[in-house]
Amino acid sequence: MPAKTDMAYTAYETDMPINQGKAEKIKAMLPLWQVGMKRTMCILSHTLLTEGKLPRWTDTKEWDDRLSQRQWNSVTRQAKGMMDSWMGLRQNDFKRIVSHSKLDTETRHRLYKINKRRAWWEPVDDEDHKLARRIIKHLRKRIPFPDPARCRTMVMDGKIAEIQPSHMGGVYYYWARVSTLEKNKPLYAPLAIHSNLEQHLNPDDPENLCNQLQVRVNEDGTLTTHLMTARPKAAPRETGSILGLDWGMKSLFATSDGRLYGLSLFAWLKARDNELTNLTRELGHARIPYKRSRRYRNLNRRIREHVTNEVNRVLNLIADQQVRELVVEDLDFRHGGLSKPLNRIVTRAGRHAVRMKLDRLNQIRGVTIIRINPAYTSQECPRCGYTSPKNRPDQAHFHCQCCGHTNNADIVAANNIKARRSRPEYWRWIGKQNILDRLRKEHAQRCPDRIHCPDHAERSTALPRQRNSQGRLTRGYKKVA
Ligand SMILES: [Zn+2]
Image 1: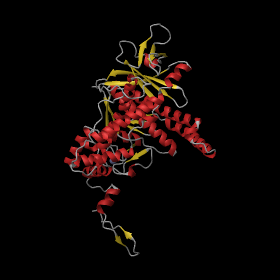
Image 2: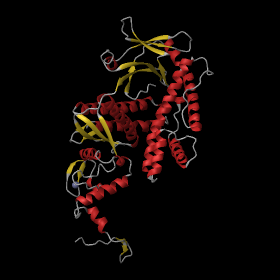
Image 3: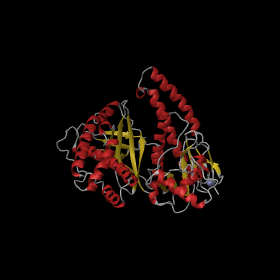
Image 4: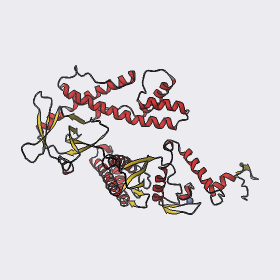
């Protein structure tokens, strides 16, 4: 995999119209490819666990000679790429765990240092390393090392799948010269490039085609092909506004300046929810596993694609305006009103789409993305800071019980998200209760009499619980002077 950090990479689906014979030759490589990836992954994980770091290279000289050494290089590189991204994700998890922990500052600091080098398994026997190993062991239990045996995509680099522009001036702009299992007999596959990639292929465009072909062998035997491009990352925008963004189901996005986007999505999802419920019931009666049903898979895909398209469309609209910085919450979609299975599909698809799209906006359009801790952003009053679930009489409305401020609940959340931007960095990592305590304390200073804060008044003036004449536990209240 390409991995220069100053470049932005994009994959474009590309048609590869080849005959059955050629397709079979490409498909014949997959089983060997998977075995090789699995083998590489074994070597990588073994070295990692015993020596504490990944090996610099993998020796493939003795491997099955049906694939050439160049092909094995592609295989090992792909497996290493999978391991790298696994380690990158665990690095974030590790950081989160340590920062949420009750460890003292110095220990935390030393753990961060180990984590930064990804040296969790470094064979050192001090307390810090022991602790680091315990944390990473816990993480690995939750999310094991990637299993490449199930990976159906072959990432072939230029040495074994060279991408060449067409000299014939025919319909196809490019050919891929692909090495297969037949030695010295590469096959030539035409690549029909879609317009979304074609627009980047003129020499003036900053985006350039990488010499790499990704072929996925689908379960039904068809092939899906992707070409990759690389371009330098955009410089950060220096002018424009700063927007807080709240995402949810009712309105897909609300902005801190009071706009609501993607309002029709929820109705569309509601309709799909009925379809999905009926279909799963039917399949349940017929005792057909969901995954085996083509209708179920198609519906699933339709929902995912629709959510992804909506996310991309709306975020493009937002980025088209003069925006310099987007402030977003770290975690989730707020949900409600959908069945559990659909909720799961939408949450996953939505989260993934948002993350991908925000990365793109950052890399290609130079929009800075700030992530904040979203705890209580839906319950906090942006005017007086009073935080309570009672500020949300329902899903759609916000009504502050302290100062009486009212607004659309999503817009309030977007405002609070924007405001969190100016909190110190460690706010991102502290727990929910901690944040609530801080918000309450701040509000108490701004609103000293607190008479109009029902829940503050209750808490602060409550007497210890005592038994009344019927023997029940009750709370006594002091008279507020
Ligand atoms: Zn208020």
